[in-house]
Length: 482
Image (cartoon, rainbow, N blue to C red):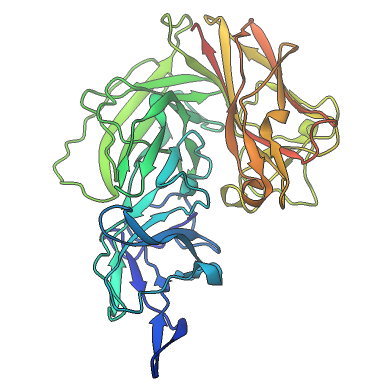
């Protein structure tokens, strides 16, 4: 769900109404009608997962299970896909997805979730918050309250609850800061993956600690960095780094900071370059339920002039998202002519002259610019001038997608990375045309990557291997001594 329609300041609700879809079955001398189920939705909760119109979009989809008994001990219909044309009215995506109440009048229960996923591992929905570029794709909603319903029921409602937490920074320029262009925000040291059990509604053990690069954009003339994260019992001491071309600014989260499931935490951030820091605490007295706003403080953050980092501490050196805005399909700029890179001081080139910048409607609301490496051609993006001081190694991760269709299969690891002229492989990511067309996955460069004073990183697709066309976005380069 790329947008959510706001109706009021009440709890998150999805009203399930019963439509006119019917099937007939002969039972003795009469004809008994089984009522098919349609969904009319309204999602409030006040907090949207992207900063544009608060409405459902075409083909937004939910997954629904119909069952009896505890958990999924007796599932009558599994993972049926219901979607909307954008008006909030949900219907089965195809005839074989339609749900029907039992004709014998017995009671059933419903479990539903969003966003829909075709392939589930039994009852497990895998959660990965590494890629924040399309937050609606990771905003997990869950409902299990609609129980004891049958064909005589007139109406029911599913109470959807956000299963993750949200953090939002509103950033303004303070003394000595004249331009926030190209700002990035990174939250260090949070878990990024977990498994959610649809049968029990519980989030399992969290894994893969990493740095989460927040999604940054302008909302009502305010600069906002936001991230959806796994719930955290204790985030005390976690460091948030705000990066500009003119310097870096660090905020250490105060004692007793936690990010609870279903809550949004807001911070007002002022960046200054004089090295002072005057945090102002905001007292909280409200009891918070559902996905509600939790004011979390107003802070002034001074510029960090640190050169030699503490041993073992990683530091994000470069975050490149290629900016936002819609790029016309008739005027796609080549690397050499593009001017909306986040990192203005670095050099961006393509030695083959074939790569360009694009946007597509199915990714990031159609405004996430990214690099296109065309099929059956040598193409690359080279970033030069990455300065490193105090670190011996580099870590690199990025988002990639392929223009795969139909029943074709492939692997995103056909994209290779060179660092200072040495080629490295990337993590394995199989893809299938029916589900993974232009779907972005986060990949990492494999191996120990030595850092030098001024580094060059090149992403490339070889004509002999890239038969699909590759997309590249959200590059994060981190310095490390580990």
